[in-house]
Image (cartoon, rainbow, N blue to C red; front, side):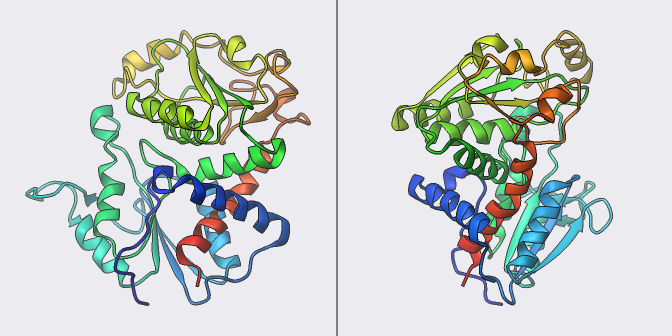
Length: 338
């Protein structure tokens, strides 16, 4: 195994030019239709999870194996230890090893590294820097793939964009409603951040509905609006679910935590207690234009969305989940394929 001099990383979709992003989506669709050649014979992918995973881990391992390669799964909960990301610090804390050293060693074992960091969860200003995933990309001599950091989830966005293309055809001018949903333990905004920017880049008209206090990251919003100006799409925000869903071709539900009260569990819980009505039901779906329903999963039935919608004929959730396999094959083929 010989690492490349300048490896290509996928930390967020901004690492791809628009022509490349379109190529990766088309390749994903082609792989789903016709299968993929074993593009990774003798290749290996190291997967490091600093927090849990179900779909990402399973779909990635299956993708590598089906392409003729080999995946090595490691969990910080059982297989290794905390790693230090900061540069120039005296390492007298919990972490016994620096990412600089771990990345150098693992780069000599595998052909690519896929990382799911664990944000500390105390300060959004600190976590949004994504120091962990950037440290891996800086020090690794092989491609690094982000399997969801605090700020971005590019793999989910690729599968989501593929799913919308598969269901709707051309995306320019189509309306996507991203609707915040109530859950006792909201997720990070990473999925929504990546989806928002991806949809804007494809010229979609995106309407994001959320309660007051659940605003997305300001820099991400700026990126999305700039992308929409270039593509001819639009990005808007509202506190009314009905306004977002009206005329939508896709209603995408997602619960994300409040950046305003990030790290303050007491204030966050109090804020969340006033949002119980934020869910997706058939009445909301009927406001759309033959709207499809999407959600990245895991999903809390009859809380975030009713069984009627989730199990109905316009639900794309299982297709989304399946498409993680095909789109990640495309990622691996483009980054590692011979």
